[in-house]
Every structure is written in structure tokens, then in C-alpha cells.
Length: 253
Length: 257
Image (cartoon, rainbow over all chains, first blue to last red; front, side, top):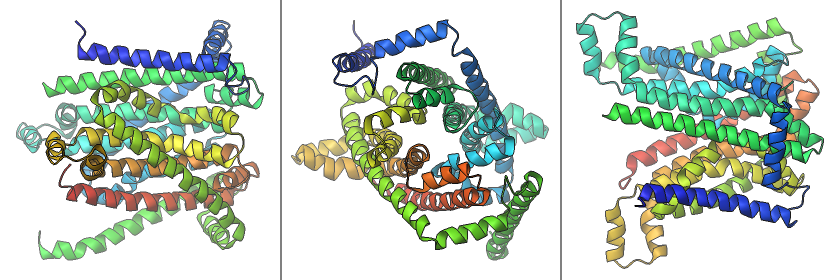
């Protein structure tokens, strides 16, 4: 029996395959000139060859290490700052408008400044990735803490929990669904921040490799790496997305 | 709340605010002393350069170029996002099929697609516009879609009972009912389109504020980098804040959502 969920899934797959096939045909027939885009099958072949020869290993490791560091900083710092801001109403009225309009500001304008501060190393990349991710984590931490039922905190007080125990045993579990949404966004934003930073100015990394290939008119290398970055980010997206949905479902029970 | 706190609150708020800015300026000055004038201009120097920029004609020339590209990008993102969002929100099956695809594309670092845009459009205004629109269109699609999907079916039934044409029921039922969500999408699309346009100028352009920024980076002109950063930050924060106020008001007064 074909259920609706299966139907949706297979329609989605069919659409993606059809889109790839259309692109392939357009490229093969020369409707899209080779100078603009190479056929998707060639991208995959070049990517496979490049990966097998280890040509991209160092850059992949560089980029993923940066993303990992940026995500870790975003989550830890974001949760800590969220707790702090939530606990201090006076500070909160002050920073609330800034947090709310934070993502309307092109954070990249600070990237040159970060290069000046940290030098041309991996650290400005980690910093820009963390700057992208941390505010999403702060906002979701505060949102989660706001939604904790008062009775839980009161029960903690009745049980004379220490402030740390209150955080670990009541606040964090009760705010968990929001925290996971924060983590999901922190991951997505950190990925964007790091790769974009590498694209602008960097010593290594996938973003820089793509730009380098573009500058040298190396279309094959460029499209192979683009395919890798797109596949990797979409994969990360579905992983965190699925994980978040599972967490939300468990909490709703 | 007692009368005393309501009178004292604004005064305390101003005190807190000035304390905050003073701390920020002190931190900035400290970093300046640490790094040196070559790397990080002092707050005073930056303010002076900001004033000089605002008084110069070439700055407004560049700002105008950015503004035009941004307006086109925003228009494309708005029109395209509204159309796609309406279709995906109205036809359930299409929405279910495409929602994760849209979400996944939204999450990719679009900056990496810049070479493709350049290969297709060349170093033109269209490239900047396409890049800005590429950033702004996804939140428009996502929020319009969820807004339309969440319109109560009874409203559409009422429209059918009144024999509204499809165009009429879109204009008179779907759009007004989904307006708060659509506006949230517009607000996010607004800032992302601006970001996309600026990034476009950063890489491949000979005009615009993004170009000015990358030129001052290449010339190691710390004061101009900071002054431009400050101006862009202030302008987009102001616009974002205004749109947020409107957004919250729309949500509060939304009778249908």
C-alpha cells in the first residue's frame, strides 16, 4: 500500500532526479555552455577522483575543525549568556533590542576586523562562525527559560536545590526543546559563517579552494568542490533536523 | 507596581544604557591600544572618519549604487517568494514535497554559489541583484508557505460559499489572513537581501558600499573599514528594528492568524 508519506517521499526523489537529469541534458547539448557549468555527472566523477587522490583532505579537515570549534563555542557561550541574561532582568531590557535585530545586520562586515585582531589564521574563521551561531543559541535559551512553568522552579525551591542543581535538574531539562532548536540553528549558521569567511579571505579550507579554482578558471575543480559543500551542508541539515524532530516528539509525550 | 518604580524606570534605563555604551567604548579603546592604530582605529578616529564619509559625495554615489541593486533584489525576492509560497502553501501535496528541499537550500552557504552567478551573469548589476534575491527569497517562501498553510479552512469554505473566484479568494482571504507571517518573511528577507547585495559587491563590483569596504581592506585603511562597518551596522540595525516593531504590531492585531 502506498501511503501518503511514501508518495511524498518518492515524488520528492523523482523531482530531484528530474532536475539533475534536466541539468545534465542542458549541459550535454550545449544549451548551457561548458564555460558556465559542467554536467552534474562530470562534477561527481571529478569529486570522486579528487577525494580518492586525497587532494581535498587537508582543506576538508581544516574547514570541519573550524566549524566544530565555532559550533562548540556558540553552544556553550550561547547557553551561558542566555542563562545570565535571563537571570538579570536589568541587563535583559538593555540587550533585548540588540539581540532581536542582530540577524538584520550583515555580520560579515566584522570579518576584516577579526582578521586584523587574530591574524590570517583559522581563528578569525572560528570567530565569525561563532558570531553567527551564538545569538541564535542565546535567543533560544532565553525563549526556553521563559517557557519553564513557574511551579517547577518553585518545587526546586521547596526541595532546597542549590543554584547549580536548579540549572542542571530543572532549567536545562525543561528548556530542552528550545535548546535543541538553538543548537540546530547554531550548527547551520556556523557552517555558513565559516565557509563564507574562507571564501572572503583565508589561508586554507573548502571556501578558499572554491574561490581559488574559480579565479583560475578551473571549472572542473570548482564544481566538484561545490558539489561536495552542497552535499555536506544538506546532509548536516537533515541530520540536525531529524534529530531535533525526534527530541521534540519525545518531549511532547 | 508602585508609582516610584514607574517614574524611576526610564532614568535607570538611560543610566544603564550610557553605562553600556561607555563600557563598549572603553573596550574598543583598550583593543585599539593593544593592537595599534594600524589594525584598529580608535573610537574617536572612527567617528571623525564616519563624519567625513557622510559629507563626501563619493560615499553617497556608492551608497546609491548599493541601494538600487538592493531594491531590485528585494523586489525579485518579494515577488518570487510570495508566488512560490502561495503555490506551495495552497497545494498541500506540493508543499509537503518541497518543504524540506526549500529548507535544505536555505541552509547552504549561498556565498559558495557566487562563482556560478558570475559565470551566468558576468560582472553586471544583474549579478548583484541575483545574488541579493537568492539570499532573500527563501525566508519569503518559507514564511508565506506556512502562513497560507495555517489559514483556517473555514475561511476558505466561507469564500467558496460566497462563490469567490480563485483570484478573489487569494486577494481577500489568503493574503490578509497570512499577512503577519508573510511580513515576518519579508523582514528576514529584507536583511538577507541586503546582506547578499553587499557580499556580491564585496567580490565582484566596481561600485557600491561592499566595493568600498573591500577596497579599504586592500588599502589597509583601518579607519574607513570601521567607519563603513559602523554605518552599515547602524543603518541595518535601525531598519531591522523598525521592521520588527511593525512585525510585532501586525501579530498583535492579527484577527485571522
